[in-house]
Image (cartoon, rainbow, N blue to C red; front, side, top):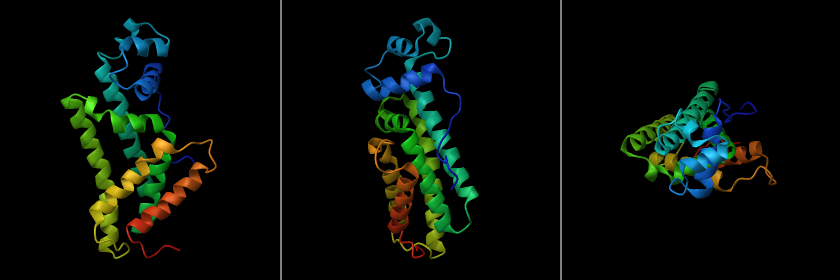
Length: 200
């Protein structure tokens, strides 16, 4: 796994960054367009040159996070050796590092799905399903090849995903565990969850 896996640094706007900070600290419904403008250091009218509503900003934050994490995790699987245990290790490593590095967006994604309108919710749920399929496919392949020995591959997949996602709620880069070490611990936990018999 290359250093920096899980890190995405596409050009975010001051509006995007301000919205993330406020949605995380105040919640979507506790944040106004005026609040976002103030936090971004612009006037309210300027926001409407970029976004038609606060709902559009929330959708942009959540859709971007999901497309970014799918891109990062899919690339990790493609770059790994073809054995299922190697691919799952790369997948979990990238998944955990992404959530350690994008904690605010991940927590918004976990708490504000209910705040999206129907179209926005459908877009985000479709992206979540795509991410779920990536985990499901790797784990199912491992079971088929008898590398993994879980009797419950679907549940194991969900458990591994939720375990990695929860990193966003507690991890601190100022703590005692460097992110790479923490990600490796989660790889070991994930391989144990799926009953991998190839662990050293």
